[in-house]
Length: 181
Ligand SMILES: CC(C)(COP(=O)(O)OP(=O)(O)OC[C@H]1O[C@@H](n2cnc3c(N)ncnc32)[C@H](O)[C@@H]1OP(=O)(O)O)[C@@H](O)C(=O)NCCC(=O)NCCS
Image (cartoon, rainbow, N blue to C red; front, side, top):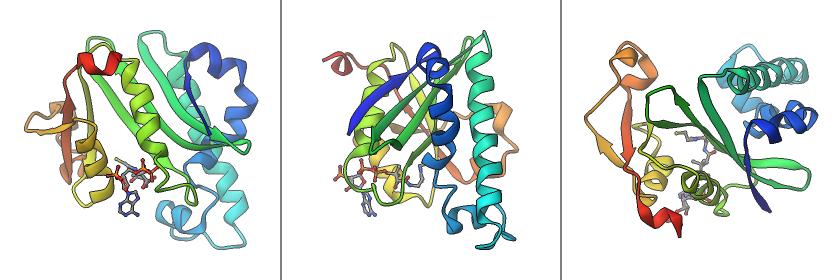
């Protein structure tokens, strides 16, 4: 399994690969995952819905990569021709880095991939990093704690009304020299 950092250049050089893979990395070819997204999805409509959602995911990332005042890169674990684990690292002008969209494909979980992907991404940063994690998501919460994130009382006032974020911990990792090793 290869761990790679995907910046703008790598993303646009491999556009077809990301178009066919990025959405799948989020398990949107899985009925349970798609049902969470849309309860009306059935085995018969799975493929169609999967294509639709995957295209939306890809286009969302593509738009972020195109925006000039928005820093974004992906850290991915790649093997067997697919993205098995992914995390995005994003930063709006003047703000802290923010980790979003961390996931490992079902079937590849528990093999240390998210840990490797997150460590690789964190090594790229030279400043503070933040994230949100749902209060019920013990596995992810423990993973972030292991990597040095701590729960912070700070929240971004822009997000105050977001229901998902209301039920989440806001976690922060200060820039640490140890990551350079
Ligand atoms: C959270 C998630 C990304 C972890 O991915 P992963 O590749 O399985 O993670 P790792 O293999 O690096 O494991 C990280 C830690 O979690 C533990 N862990 C992984 N799966 C576990 C499970 N099913 N039950 C208990 N612990 C588990 C591992 O033992 C490891 O801990 P350790 O280092 O102390 O041994 C993955 O479970 C996932 O995709 N979940 C759904 C999406 C999600 O919740 N994303 C986070 C949003 S904030």
